[in-house]
Amino acid sequence: MIERELRRALRERPAPGEHAAGERTLRVLRAAHAELTPPPRRRRVRPRAVAVALLVLFGLLGTALTPAGADVRHWIAERVSPEPTLSRLPAAGDLLVSSPAGTWVYRADGGLRRLGDYTDAGWSPRGLYVGAARGRRLYAVEPDGTVHWSILRPGAVSRPSWSPGLGYRVAYLEGGGVRVAAGDGTGDHAEGRNAAAVTPAWRPGSRNVLSWATRDGRVVTRDVDGGTTPWSLAPGGAVRDLEWTRDGSRLVVLLSGEVRVLGPAGALVASIPLPPGTSGRALSVHPGGRAAAVAGDTGGVVSVPLGGGAARRLFDGGGRFARVAWSPDGRWLLASWRGADQWVFIRSPGARRGVPDARHVVAFSGIENQFDPGGAAGDFPEPGGWCCG
Amino acid sequence: MTGVRGSTASVRAHRLMTTIRPAPARAERSAAAPRAERRLVRDARAGSAEALEELFRLHWPGAFRAAYYVVHDATAAEDIAQEAFLAAIRALDRFDPRRPFAPWIHRIVVNRAIDHARSRALRREVGPELAESAEAPAVDAGISSDLLRALAGLGPEQRAVVVLRYLLDCTPGEIARTLGIPRGTVNSRLRRALDRLGESVGAPS
Image (cartoon, rainbow over all chains, first blue to last red; front, side):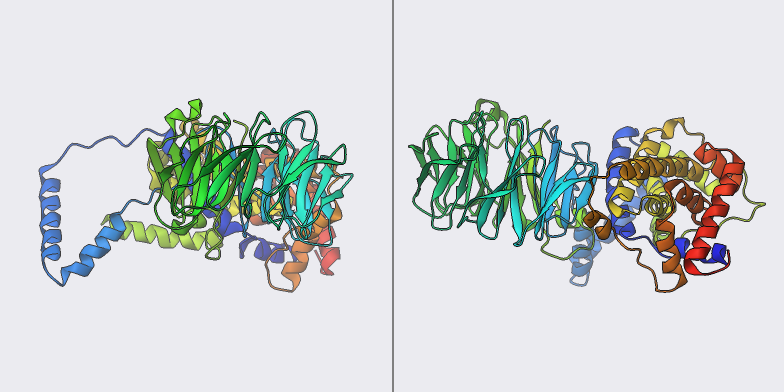
């Protein structure tokens, strides 16, 4: 009896997540298979096949030229229009991706690993861990999904940010405050209150120096180990995003209509207006540190030279762009185009010299369905960081 | 003609996504692969994406469920089964299409799942909250759900032999070859597993 029931229980119903996992895996396999196998051999053209093809062509022309054929023509156009599917990343490194449906690691070869139901996540400096948030708990997760430690807080946690260098600190937001824990999950404590919903930014360097934005429009920079606040200032508007350059010499602050570049002591170095009609939402500083890319609620994707000079629009298709992320080698910029359910990769030959441009743009559609087949509409996956190629 | 054949295949594939194929009669089961599967392997090797997809849809439910019921973690099961299929595709040109595909993929999946379950058991720093978050099998209430819950309480080696026997319908000899253990060990693990499952649900084994 047990044996019969076991067979029935195991065989008759799918396991949890079986269908969605199958769809994701099939996409990965198709891409791997296409790379590994030779293209089908071209067949010799046969006269009979040519005749059949001509008949089909005349039939299509017939439908196209009659009113009744218009619907058929439209149907055909829909079926043959290209729908490129993202099958691999254009550069080395692993991409962290989050949506309300969960967090994934997308590998350069197209492999997709779901880490869990985390709503927000960020890489540790060498990609050994992911700082992830879900509800009231902050997690340190290994890239294979193993939870290393977690911290439970009374309020909702979000926007984890791992310190660079040795990665011994993790900052995050909880209930309007900024908190910091050690990299092993110990020593969790509050650093500041009244924080805006902006990911805190660590300054690269020997000391653990953290900058964050407050809800009243200030930028606070604090030496976490020394317990001091070297500076705090109001850059002149609500801060949308902020990030230190990799050498720690500049703090790049995004306001709605401009980018402000601050020195290590808070002095204003440059103020670069965004092109007219651009409302900045998020920024990503180029690994070389001489430029930043801005994603706009309006105005598309903009390149901002940090040493001065005018900002230039790299790409605009209408609708909202929510995040931007540079590939680790700085040659590709990924912009998430929420308004079109697309990811846009912009190749930038000048990026090595810190002068991003847009020589080559590749857009992939159907991103929502690719990460969460059959999931709720609006759960658009946003890149959370492209790490460590 | 192509369209008709394609739609038939997709209907069949959809059915197979939710239900594991009935086990072939003992007389049918041999070292040789069914003709249709041999054709799929040959075509996939020659570059046919359709053949690859059909082969995948035939074997994904078994592979994923095998991994899931050994590790009891949907994310890990996806990873294990996905990597097994990727490994299979990369080795496709070395695979003998006369041999059945299923035991090959099942061997990779089940052994990786056992390794994963063992290594997770060693990492005690994972707190109880993770165990609570493990997904519960979506089955009707009753003896089936009790059995699946009880299955999660067995050790990974015992879960593996149960999965191979009752999900994938392997014989004790095939299980022994898959896991690289003596046949007597397979029989004793199965016996003990059934006894424990029977005790858990209060039914004779």
